[in-house]
Length: 93
Image (cartoon, rainbow, N blue to C red; front, side, top):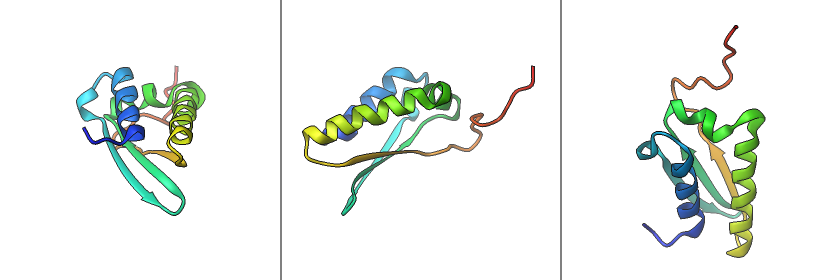
């Protein structure tokens, strides 16, 4: 693994909570706005990453902000919507 604490932390965290850890991909880009981490996961794992009402995603973003502060960087997270994701589709019951 590369020596990039924010990317390594995100990969570790997300792989720990999803069922398909081999499908977790993190891209890291740096520009004048700071660090942008783009996260891709298996479509079946989107619910676990986002959580109820986005609670898990908010928590991950908060933790990344702390890692960024510790390393003097502004870290943002973009969770990419995969093809075939069930997020946002209501299931009538």
